[in-house]
Image (cartoon, rainbow over all chains, first blue to last red; front, side):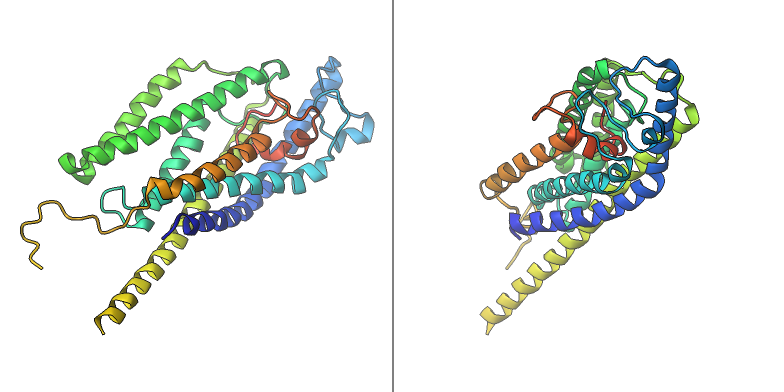
Length: 267
Length: 70
């Protein structure tokens, strides 16, 4: 199998994952965003501080959601359909391709796992390290939560934490592979996972906490975060399952081709 | 074909060399990072290009995929 096989499989898996994630995001996530924007607009209408939100008056307010002073504004209808689809498709394809290439590197390097087996491991580790653990430290926030003044700091913290998590997870996998001959599969995996958790607990303590929730309703916040996590988990879950299936298919095809060559040589 | 003296089992799964993988990883990695940047962070903390058209278009995806949006 070549890097190309893995990349193509990754992109295909990304496409399938995007479709699944869009369905989840549109059906369960969008109602929460609409509720949050409704609260945001009600708050800015009563407070009238107009901090960097340029909402049109009256009926228009229900259809636009705009930040910043420059005029480009996309209707809520487009944000919730084509905009959402663009974002999810672009991210899914990027994740799928990168995951495919990491799986290509991992093949044959994780003990005696087959290509499909190491792909499944890589998918699981990627979801935990890139998405799940960063979500626990810096959960998704709905519109109306978060001050525009701290977006730079929050962005740096979020991506910094993602970077630390991914690097530590990669190091933990390398550690597990190194320990494999001495400890066996069980011991190596438990050691690697424990090392990742220990380092991330320390990192989580060192990175400063962001709490700009204010008096935003707790139920809407929970629903939004639950549905955001559901969307992210759908993306990575479908990505991992489909990519593993596609790699298994490629692996079987390669094995069939190899045994055919052997049979031809034996003649 | 005696394998009795072989101590460590030879890996049955062939690896792809780093040399073969590097150009793919470099090119697609760059493309992926750019894509993720534009969808997840552009016109929030950093604006290339200026304006808010990209931010507005991917707004809902950015919120739901867990990125700090605004």
